[in-house]
Length: 59
Image 1 (tube, rainbow, N blue to C red):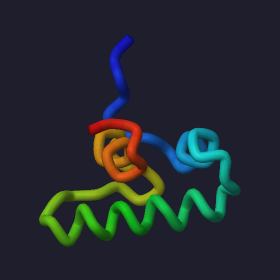
Image 2: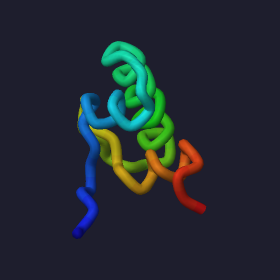
Image 3: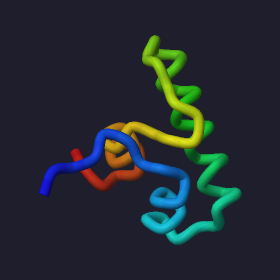
Image 4: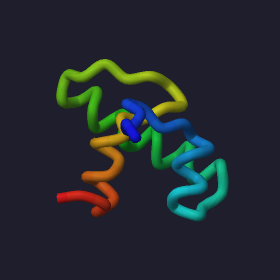
């Protein structure tokens, strides 16, 4: 199974078992960090690899 490039807010909420509003906050925070590093971001979605890295789901 191939991993999707981006996760939606709903997927973030489900993965972290948090409310949708908290998931929006997390996505905004992660996207702000990516934007600061010069990457393009998509509102309401976050790069899956970056999400996993920042939430300690990968190395």
